[in-house]
Amino acid sequence: MFILVNLKTYPCDPVAVAEAVADVDETTDARLAVAPQAADIARVADTGVETWAQHVDPIDHGSNTGHTLAETVADAGAVGTLVNHSECRQKLADVDGAVRAAERAGLETVVCANNPSQVGAAAALGPDAVAVEPPELIGTGTPVSKADPEVVEGAVAAAGSVDDAVSVLCGAGISTGEDVAAAAELGAEGVLLASGVAKADDPAAALSDLVASQ
Ligand SMILES: O=C(CO)COP(=O)(O)O
Image 1 (cartoon, rainbow, N blue to C red):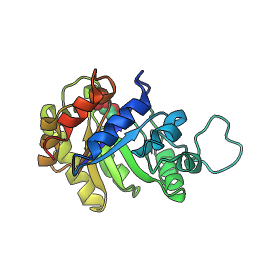
Image 2: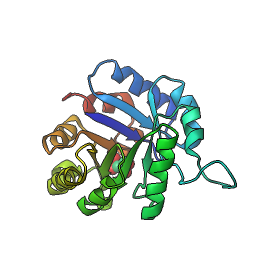
Image 3: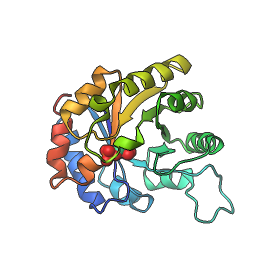
Image 4: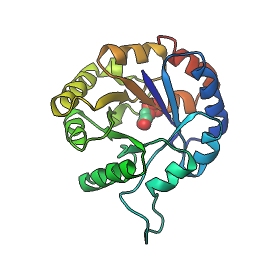
């Protein structure tokens, strides 16, 4: 399973979380990665942990004040990027443009979607993966893999019917190894989570629990 930890703008120490991820990474077959804020990518990548961006814009080099260029996050050490998070919603054309920008920069892509229909649309854009995250469960601690298993199964079916090369992650409320195991049972190849690690008193302990079933 791929366990991708999105730090959002939580007030955690991104390097301390990255070091905890690096430690736990040595104990598991699961693939672990961290998505810090853009300004923290270089120092998180310096820990050696797999580092992702939270967002890139559908732009090329040029007059784009305030935007995030895919090549710049790649140069800073990111190997992948989220696209279209529920908290950073993009128009379809911009999701497409961001996936193309990420490809151009050699970044792996996970396009986030709220439900199986959006997963189908996202999969048609040819990302490496899609992540289904019902917005109403984000940050609640109630895991989508238990609260709404049909959404995960529906997302796996929707992506598979469009392009079975696109893998499916699920997210929202994931915080334990049991939640990760439930996601795997439903056909997800990974999980995307945030508060379960970023807001934990002991992120290393939270991560150890997350990989316990791997
Ligand atoms: O939005 C999410 C990950 O991108 C999920 O957040 P939580 O893990 O806090 O529910």
